[in-house]
Length: 282
Ligand SMILES: NC(=O)c1ccc[n+]([C@@H]2O[C@H](COP(=O)([O-])OP(=O)(O)OC[C@H]3O[C@@H](n4cnc5c(N)ncnc54)[C@H](OP(=O)(O)O)[C@@H]3O)[C@@H](O)[C@H]2O)c1
Image (cartoon, rainbow, N blue to C red; front, side, top):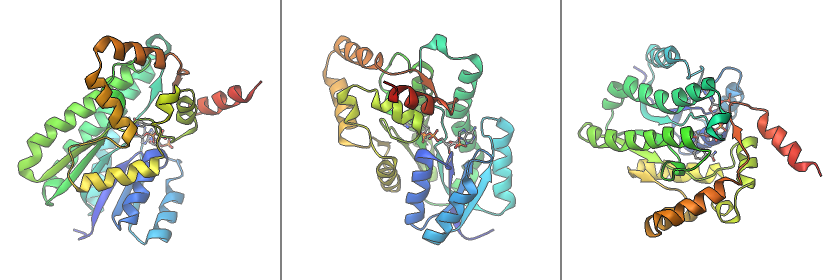
């Protein structure tokens, strides 16, 4: 077995996953980066190797297909790579009324947001147990705490990730596997999300964070073995307000705020560009 240790990050060609990869490389952690085929992963790999002098292994797979999760694990084993940190980042976002989404889209969203984190945690469990301590970081969302219109399936998948992480943490404590969950608010990661973030209410716009900053907080707090990571002052404040104000006021604020969101599902990669050109029209 290769004596080097690796951090495996899913969905790492772009957005928050890419920011996490760069943050880990800055900390001299070797990487296994997993993203869709033809997603620019080889260019990112070259650039990280050149800039940070760490080992980077790119693996291109569509993780929404269950067998690919299994073949990912087998490839890692066959290459004799030893994973001590698993970061379940890959996820499909959406902001739309339930009737606007297709069955195919919801199936893919549930598979990517729920099944991939579950399957990979299970597949890599024995390998993680061989290192002390080892870590699993699951990427949830602040929306897992608020039951928002236009976020029904997305929010529910992120509630699953939150609940799964907390239970798994309790269970794996005796194996010295730390499980942390991060719940970011809005991050400017891709054109579609940037556009949705811009259409937010003023107060919500104050909480939008740069993915690089969130990634630095995520890795620092993961290594500190923090259970729940809420990045940013404004996001912590939203959670506090949620605890303090009566439920009906929270619902009023939240739904008034959500109705301002433009509908999108991130499965449509051109949608952000379409929204941007619509917005720039007089
Ligand atoms: N952005 C936010 O405001 C925000 C807020 C809270 C939580 N989050 C969570 O943060 C995570 C990352 O979000 P993001 O905004 O960075 O997303 P993103 O910009 O869409 O990036 C997603 C990454 O996953 C890859 N990917 C997509 N489908 C895949 C598949 N089937 N198999 C393998 N890789 C796949 C993408 O590759 P391609 O480039 O090839 O598509 C890309 O590298 C998600 O779990 C999301 O729910 C995001």
